Amino acid sequence: MATTALNLTPSRHRQVFRAICDVIQSDATLSRVIKTFSVMNGQPIDTQDFTVAHTPAMRLIPSEGPDAWYGPNGLLGPLLVTVEICLRGSDFDDALDIYAAVRRALYPTTDADRVAIHQRLVSAGAEGMFLLEFTQGSFAPRVMVDGPLVDVSGQMSLRIRQELA
Image (cartoon, rainbow, N blue to C red; front, top):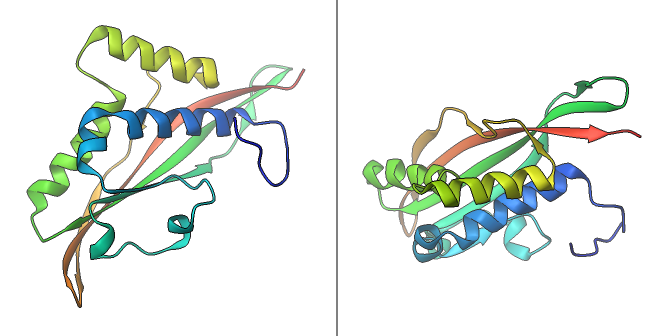
């Protein structure tokens, strides 16, 4: 793990988020199709709006949901990852296909790949048998001076257990 400005011990939420980023960025399909990745690691693109010049572009943004006690020595709560994708043009077939490619990156077709990703997320701190839940994706057209765009957004949720002892 990289050292951050605050130099804190990496949280489980951070470790799982970075594992998700690695899986998505190393996916053969997504790495071939996506020109610009923003994974909130302090790069200038993390604070910029996507334009036609960035497309196809993807941004992954972490946040947390409410925690609840998980026995006397731990908390259980979700890591929420917002997925933002910006595509050139106005073809919603591309929007549907790219969102499916994100799901497929995290739930690959082969058993061995699925198990490897599952084990990676669990070892980073994710909890549970069915780790990822994707919420409703949304797709919206946007008109820019230099051409039309389609904005794709959605969110995934994973449970994270934090030991207090």
